[in-house]
Image (cartoon, rainbow, N blue to C red; front, side, top):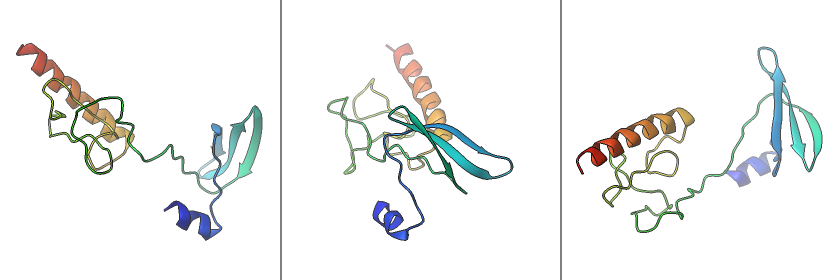
Length: 119
């Protein structure tokens, strides 16, 4: 996908930047970014912010992962290790959206509460 976007000539990649402001009225008109202490404005018609697509699952050992590194969970956010729950973009749940991650986090905490209540 990155190569296709680069080859299109329609996309500008701004790495190692901080988005300070997205502005416009009904539609996006521009963006202000901060890079190495300097602000820069761009006139744009759309913005797509991407922080990466590789799951950061290496911090926990021995849980089952799929071929991409995502932690395998069931519908209760349980991993293959009893007492370890996972939620959000690091899991095999298909939709990688904030609202989905929030819902999965709520499910995980409820499952963890249920697990601890039975101990």
